[in-house]
Image (cartoon, rainbow, N blue to C red; front, side):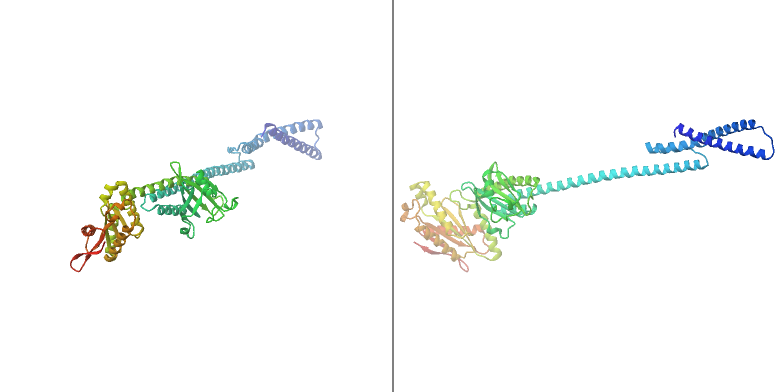
Length: 494
């Protein structure tokens, strides 16, 4: 409390005390007169004035020291708390009412101190809780992002692993399309391969359709809509809403609704295919997902090329360069498979050993290019007239072996005779200069015996072939098993 205020309070108290003293003096004067006591009025007035002044002064001083200062301390404490949030305690102000007020104020300040301390603690706890929530949210986001990256890496790894399998290219593409569709929650996923010579796309794998097999081999030309545009330009295209396409439906099998991402499949800068991924919702592909699809497109291009190279290498290691037929390696693999199958299911297996008659004379007379042309034509003739399950292998210059699964000795002899007769009537390069004016073949046929190895079977067919040559060529000889012995029988001879 300001000093002037305290003094005003003291002055008011002194004035009130003086007034009271004056009233008491007047009452005393009349009391003295009523008792008959004679007193000089001037002396009484002087004494009254002095008494009033002394009473007022003493009262003012007493109020100033006993009341004003203590009240001033209380007011100052309240003012300090109001202005500065001060919690400074008051000293002991006595046992009267002012002292009680001071103690009550100290209690209030103590409670405020405790409350403020709790508020500070709660504020710190709230701050720590908020920081923990922020950290947890950041951790959750990072964890989700990490999980997404791991799923993306796993998907890319699956694509690489699928491309490294021994499946044919169509099987690899179908596997990849199914993996993409499931992993990315796609409505449809389509994989096209580019035929740059004819400027068209061929659908090789599809996911998300009721009968995807019916769509395979469907053709899309480069100048037909968005799919062809991506194949021609090599630039990715995101269609946010298929219903708003100005040129009509994107492609008939794809529903005209939702969104689709169409991306080129490239390898070393060359466009080898197109990938299309769709979802039922408009604007369903985020920028991050588009980036992932682009990365998948690049990896898919590499996978396609690796698969093609793998099969080219495998074909080169198992096929004859000149005729495209199998070689000894492929024959050995297929024969081993058929022997296992025959043992398991009790099926018959036969082989034909074939040799072109007087082939050296044809090469000497007309040259090796003519001989090569004759070999290629013979390979084509046999391929066209045998089953898909049969294996034809060129094992020497003019020597061939035909593996006939599920074929009895009698059926093998019939097949050999069919091939011999077809060759005899066909026109071959340089064939007119051969003995008899025709290119001919000799055939030895053999069928698998119980407990016989593949080498034994081939050796018996080869022996039958030499028997056919000894019999004058252009014939079929079959090694037929009887109950105890094997005998040679000529099934045909010209």
